[in-house]
Structures are given as C-alpha cells and as structure tokens.
Image 1 (cartoon, helix red, strand yellow):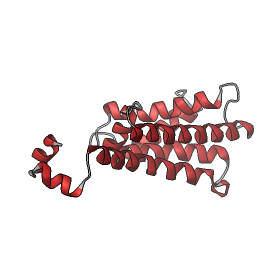
Image 2 (image 1 turned 180 degrees about the vertical axis):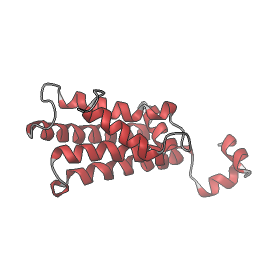
Image 3 (image 1 turned 90 degrees about the vertical axis):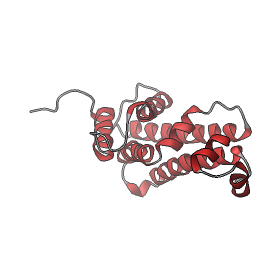
Length: 166
C-alpha cells in the first residue's frame, strides 16, 4: 500500500479512507477479470447464439479481447495460487469457467465440428492456455492490434497451421 500511495501521490491513510485494505483491492482486480470472462461464457451458453462450434470460436475470440482490455487484472488472476480466501474464491470461479468451456467443447464434438478424441477438459485448458500466454508477451499499442491477435489465435486454434487449400 505504501508503494501505491507513493505512485499516486497520496498518503497511505488517504488510500485506506477509500479502500478497506489490500485484500479488497485484490478482490476488485480479480473480479474485474472474472466478471468479464464469466459474461463471455454466459453468452456462449445461450444456444440461440448459433451452433456449439460457433459459440466456442466466439468464446476464444472474446477471451482474447477481455485479456487485452483487462491485461493487468487478467495477469493478476493468472498469478493467484489460493493463498487467501479471496484467491480461493477466484480459483473456484476459474474452475467454473473452465468447466463451462469444456461443456461447450463436448457439445461441438457431438456436432462433429471438432475432434472428439481429445478430452474436452484438456481442450479447454489448451485453448485458455493459448489465450492466457498473451500476458507474457503482448503489449497493447504494439504492432499487432487486439482484433488481429484475436483473429490469429482463433484461426490457429480452430483451423491449425496448415495452409488453406488453393
């Protein structure tokens, strides 16, 4: 909190006047990321949004946009290890998101749109792993826009690296 106060040019007591403590700040940051990701998953659960495959692609695309728009909060979310009640609650919410994505993968496999020989839970982890790796290297305002990045990840995840037919 001392570092934050110094960065903002406030006293620590001024920050504590508005924020109960660092645990509260952590919860706010984690909720920022989790609320956005939960909204993406909830939208994908609406079957009127197209086939399971179309909704699965949309989740990947929108997850990239969430990460880019909320990169500091998502980075923090990816670093939690369950060392407090706030972190444990965040991990539980992440597991819920992973499980819903696996359900969507299972539904897309049942449609015949994606491979059925890879466990849906593994596919879910791999898809989110690809998206989550962006926190390590992506910098907004760089050479690649958020839309280009979203397009590239979605294409690689669903169409692979093979050149399209001529």
